[in-house]
Image (cartoon, helix red, strand yellow):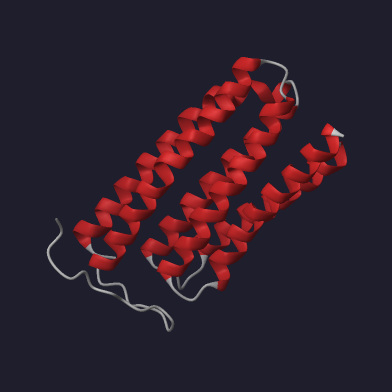
Amino acid sequence: MSDVVTAVVLLVGVSLSLLAGVGLHRFPDVFARMHAATKPATLGLALVLAAVAVRVPDAGDAAKLLLVVVLQFLTAPVGAQMVGRATYRAGTELGAGTTVEEPAGPPT
Amino acid sequence: MSGVVAVCFGALAVSGLLCVARVARPGSSLPDRLVALDALLVVIVTGVGLGALTQSGRRFLDLLVVTSLIGFIGTVTVARFIERRGA
């Protein structure tokens, strides 16, 4: 039974990572591709490493895998925000469906 | 179970190849390539983490923590470069 659960979680996580790769080619705009490159990739990583952490016999190894997941959750949003801000400020042209909403006032 | 793991490795390899194709594509801009490399790094970390199911793959778990941190630092560095220089 736990074999089946592990296999299902692994397959779901890996399909999310595959969707991240596919989305890099299908989306029309840099900003849209950023969605594809960060969200499903990080969630796929979390699912796969969680499934592996359950199966690993040593608790220290499982802790290391969960540490990688925590680190990725902490760093991926920061990295994506910085890349998005840098790309926007560099004046990259927007794709067809992308709209811009400027903030109302100066940043608080 | 080993069949499932083999399928997972194959799918991760395909995803990695798609990310590399995005990097190598002639029409990509610098932020495009940066985003694709970041995704490639996450896919690689996923793949090495999946290899921890076997005894020989468990040696690389310390490397995994370091790799994810250094990948993040590299992404932030190139992002700051883009902001300073323009894409």
